[in-house]
Image (cartoon, rainbow, N blue to C red; front, side, top):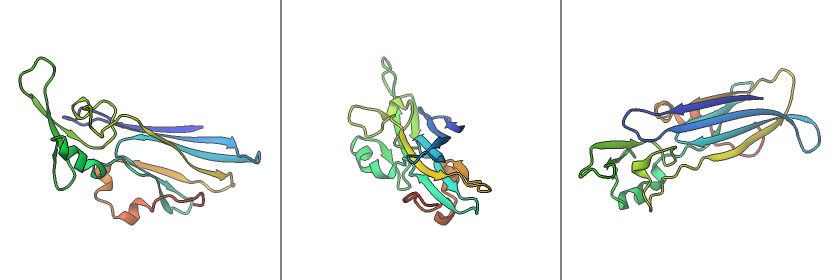
Length: 168
């Protein structure tokens, strides 16, 4: 069993993005040895599984802000054309907001300034068994986990197509 955890919290963001990856050596439904890939993500990190030939396949869709930008605008959040989200926040007892916070993803650990009663922002991670494959000698798939900032400068074919089915 192998695992990888990526956690990121950048200055002026009240909230952290977390991605955890687990490779499990198990037995499939037929009792044959297999490898399972499990991914848990709360944030905009990109997870790409690569075959032993180096062919990339996106394992999980990141939780970006684009899908919830209209709801965030309706709640008074500042949403830019590029999808960046900002909000002013004041602690209980303060008369006016003291800081502006940026929101990198629609799912965050923490993120109090973004989690109002009607906000679509949540802290629940997506947990998914992404793939299961039989163990084959000589095949060594590998996994890449990178931030949304890195993904923004890559071409879509570099990030890999969406994962469909169980074939690699």
